[in-house]
Length: 494
Image (cartoon, rainbow, N blue to C red; front, top):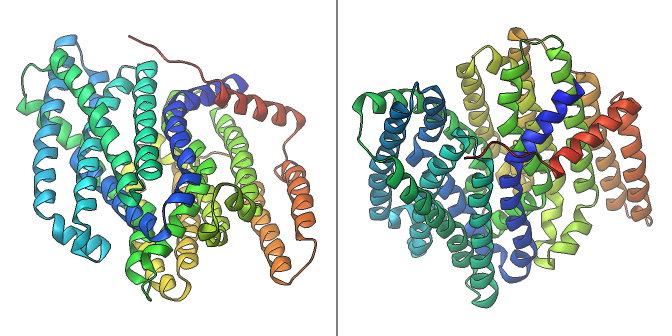
């Protein structure tokens, strides 16, 4: 069992290398943004960045998932070549017209997203970024389909390095603000995407098959509503914060809110990495003896790291902002505990969804996510006018908690896993309670709050181990699991 969990960590690490590379580039920009980009400028960039993500989802139309499925199921090389060729042509047939239409509507899109048509140039950069993301996802999916992890990481590393270089040059040296951040985001996927496409077209472009096209669209297109629901769940708060905040401070509030998200990057990276590795782990092990207990143990270790990281980020939010931020972003610290809590519960839901995947009930999962996305929008509309960015963060926390519970209930009906729910969820609640007490003491003018925070950090870390019921063997395995993330294995190559 321990070996299997170690394999999960290593596979998560392999996928995580690409995620971490992108995260390092983002992390390196955190102090730069704080010092060179005003909150309003960062607010503009944040809104356009969510537009880039949306455009990438719509333009890609689930073809990257189709490519992985059909390439691996192909009976021979000729069939595989025709599949790749068809998907390459299909992706261009879909993405190019969407990009052209968006360019023609750049003015109205600027008014809708940013409240004024004067930001049309930002929208055009965003359109380029969305188109590039669609191409890049197809190209990277080809490498994943063939288990070429080194090449996958090389492309991701090149993208991260180019993004960081462009962003620093434009933001720091040329002081281009939002334009610099967006160009640094939009250009790398276009460049790397075109490089991969050029290589694939030379190797695989043969013919376009209507039958294959019909099959890949039939499989991939239903994933688009699911991805759109996830997009709403992840980003609706940013857009609604811009729309519902009054007093001319909307874009500044968005900038402060998004900066808090950047500080929570330490939670985002392991969740994204596990999200890539977990499906293969459950599919390859669910029918084996002891699989249920193994999944439960993996969730225990994952919960420990998530809750611990979320607690420390929340406890020392002000100090972190002071270290990597600047005075203009100080208010971001107030929403970090809420956002950290929401990410912890989202991480739980990744593992809780195991039963639905094993039973093939992905449509049920899609319905749950869509319903929760709708709830998130409603909560944002209710809470943002009175609470601003704190209301947006509270809406996200509430939604992710409810989503984790609902996914757990439906998953357990199809494939029961003996999760230590009272302990893991209780640990998360205990972390929130300690943070609330510390905040209450600080607001009450208590003199030695820094002592309280240091004692809380040490005491909670030790107490969490006992609260989760982790033995010395569990602690050792958890540490070995963490080490596997640091030294990931390498998958098969060409």
